[in-house]
Length: 253
Image (cartoon, rainbow, N blue to C red; front, side, top):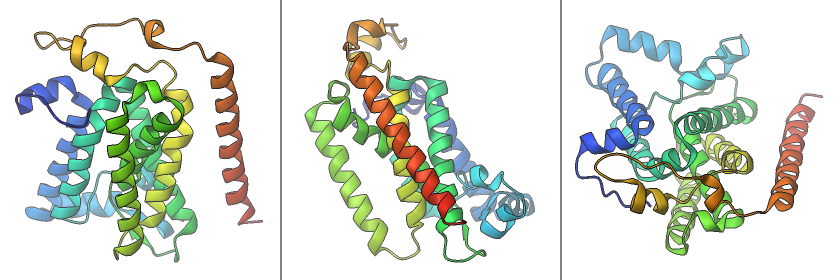
C-alpha cells in the first residue's frame, strides 16, 4: 500500500495523475521561487503566501494558494515525498475528484485553523502540511472504523508514522502546529463521507493493474452492509464538527 511498485516515473504518473500533478506544482514553484529566484516567482509568492493580516483584509484565496508554496528545498522535498508515499493509495481508493476535494479541504482546514489560533495577525505560513496530515486523518479513520480497507501491517505503519510526525510537530521549531492538527481533524471528519464506497487498495493493485489499465469493480461487492452503523458514525462526526465550529465561533463572542 505504501511501498511503490511502479516500474518508472511515467507509469507512476499514469496511475496517479493527481498526486503527480501536485508534486510537479511543488517542484515547479520551488524552481521558480527559490532556486532561480525569478521576478515572477517573487510576485507569485507575495500573491500566494498565507498571511493572517491579509486574509483578514479579504484575501481569502491565500488559505488555499499557500498549500502549494514551501519555505525551501528540504520543506518541498519532505512534503512531496510524503505525498508520493501516502497519496497514491488514497487517490485510487477515493477516485480523482474525491481525492482533490479531500486534499484541498484538509489543506484549507489546516490554514483556517492557523488563521484562527495563530499568535499574531502578522503570522505568515506556506506548505502542504495540513493536507498531508489530512491524508493521515483519513487513514486513521480507516484503522478505527473501516478495518476492511487497510490491513494490519499498513495500519501499524500509518499509526507509527503519525505518532512520530506528531511528536516532531511539537518539538521542532518553526512548525505550523495548527495546520498539522486542524488538517488531521479535517481528514478524520471527512472519512465517513469519502470512504462510503471505497475499495481496498490491494484489490486494485492485485487485480486492477493489467497491461497499464485499471479494471472497474462493483463497489457493492466489497462494501459491507453496515448502513445503520455508518449513519450513526456520520451523525457523530457531524456533531463533532459542529461542536468544533461552535467552539471557534465562541472565541469571538
